[in-house]
Structures are given as structure tokens and as C-alpha cells.
Image (cartoon, rainbow, N blue to C red; front, top):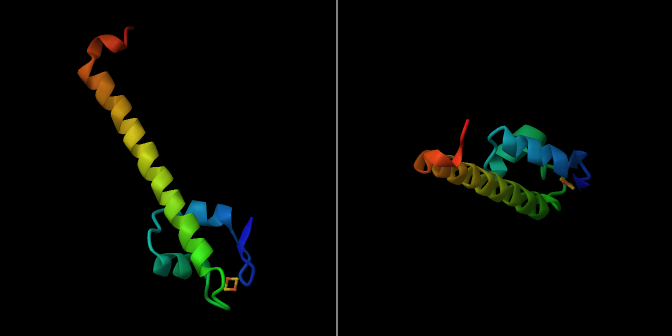
Length: 79
Ligand code: FES
């Protein structure tokens, strides 16, 4: 889905930018030029960026929980 029509920025590009470490609207603007023309996309772009960050955070904590379970339950994994 195109989020920023003026600069042809898709939702996928925002996901990729967040995966590369973008975490603020200023960084997103700098990286993708999103919201730098008419500005109508800024709210939507911010929402998508935050959703991506939340997903990354929950994925990371899920992985950490998995590692902790392996660490604290050494018999859980048998060779
Ligand atoms: S739609 Fe993004 S700046 Fe216009």
C-alpha cells in the first residue's frame, strides 16, 4: 500500500526502514522523504512506524522468552 503519494513511499518501505533502525518521524522523513511535500501522510506513516516498532519489540521479547526457557530448562532440548 502506498502511504505517501507525493514521494511514492509504500508501507513496505516504512517496514524496511524500521528494520534498519529508524525510530522517529524525523529519521523516517530523512530516509524516505515521507511527509515532506503536502504532509497529509504523516499521521498514517507515524502509525505504521509505531506498529512496526511494536511488532519488532514483541518479536524480540518472544525470542528472549524462548531463549530463557531453553536456558532455565536444560532438559527441554535433548540431543
Ligand atoms: S502524501 Fe506524503 S507528503 Fe504528500
